[in-house]
Length: 170
Image (tube, rainbow, N blue to C red):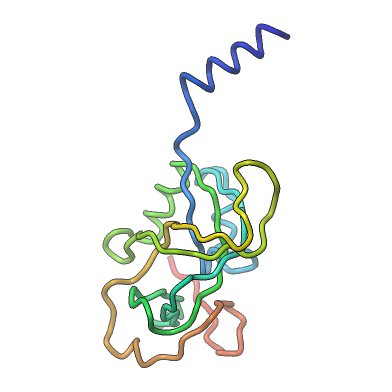
């Protein structure tokens, strides 16, 4: 028993878990949304739900294209404080998400400030409700000009009152 504890300590010092990132999901990758299953697939990597949060600044969350994709446009100060979910992901999941989001061609991954709301657990690595954190999010930096005239949303749900159900495409 004592040897296995020492081995575990040595492994954690020699190979520390540093390949974890925090990512904010506001669209189809959130719980109960069409692409959430991808967050649960171990073949894509590991993702752990940490908390619900909202952007500190307002951003336009719009629904665009013929597939009704939710986009967070990188126009701080416009739109609404957007609600979503914070996940801790390993390097494999982060690489999957970059590929899935076609980053950096389609989306860019940038850090924005989020206000933590409901948290999922307890412990020293747990986010604190009310804290402000800088976390990665996928945003659109290039888009059609008329997208700024689209309705903006505080929270995305494919089955929302907007009537713009997400269309899965391959």
